[in-house]
Image 1 (cartoon, rainbow, N blue to C red):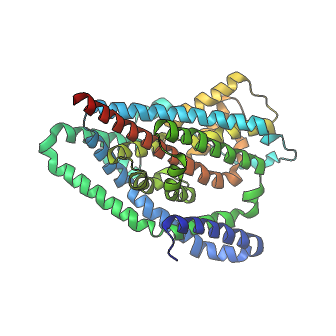
Image 2 (image 1 turned 90 degrees about the vertical axis):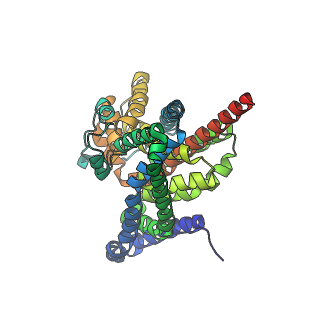
Image 3 (image 1 turned 135 degrees about the vertical axis):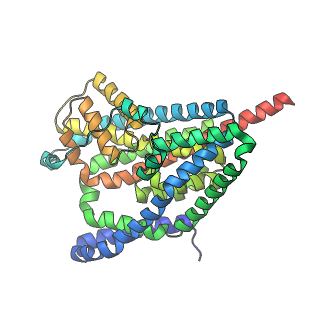
Length: 414
């Protein structure tokens, strides 16, 4: 029997989790021997292969997307739709997280040891205004070598505008960019053949190192975050697909599942971007210009999964430390999380840094983050799957709305 790629990746996920858990429980010494020579190298090679393609794909796809949209008004219209959609869904996400957390009360469980939080030290995130001012790169090559996605996107949009404005004069450069993009997509296809092995290594290493503690510690908090992620995926994104894109949500999730599986194993929207764009274009029928513009932008600023974690974690930590949050403080949590989702885009360890900002905004102890560090790696996997699904849902909605607009204009002309 020949298995498709999705089946292979999901099988690798399950097998990696089982192998990692068994080794952690029954043969920890054997895991310590195998991990640095087998599991970690498999995962790292896969991550490196994908990371190798991220910057050129983001740059080339945004250039093509901007040039393909042609009319600056069209680019502005699509950009506005995209940013408004991401801000609204991030707001909805954190409200869902807060609501479920207050319904289930994960922090009210007795016996939670706050001494686990003492070793956590947070990094300071840059102010939102500073990040927005730094979007325009002083040196585009430096932005590319540092992987600064916002600056890369800004530079690529300018290039796309220039190619559109100059038209025939830069036809050769546009053709070169198209060929470069085709080359990158071919390399994505090659890299994806290694995905099941990389997935197995990443999951086996994560579960094997943390073992049952990763699955049991703060289990109620874990369950609340997962429940909120699922509610957001099926209600918010499912509603987007059904009501705005006029498609079947089941069809959407079934066809996008290969990218979701890779997102789960890599825990990085940027690293998964080459695969998620390829899947959206090939299996969901999203137009290449829209996909090339919306999904890289979403990978940079769309953090719905992280927003859910922030909402649940804020309530959880407030309950553990017996702090009652007022309605004004809850509104502050929502606003801070939504604004910070753009302001700290591209910062390493962004989820925990954003959470530190949110906790500080309502005077909760930042040290409380230490309570959830043990299971954050597993939740980060799930959050990434949700984030990239939101990027694809937005791309499909925008693509379909642009198709309908084109049809209406053509009918009006005829």
